[in-house]
Length: 88
Image (cartoon, rainbow, N blue to C red; front, side, top):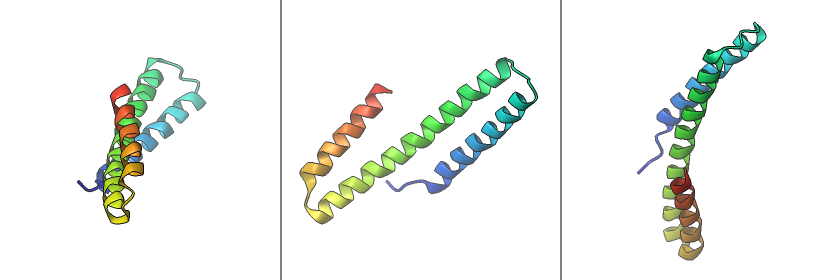
């Protein structure tokens, strides 16, 4: 599994655009449910981006462990990341 850099970048750009829109609404004193809904959408997008980054990191940890022979340390790190996924 390789990191899907395009997917991660698309998610981050989308979140950035939405944050700009939210900031504009706040500047215009347009406090409404739309702002709250957009903030929730940004959180969801950032969570997806974070999950993609964590998956890529786990993949890199495995590869690095086999190259460097420090499997035990990397396995502990991967287990920690898996536990993080399971809590979400």
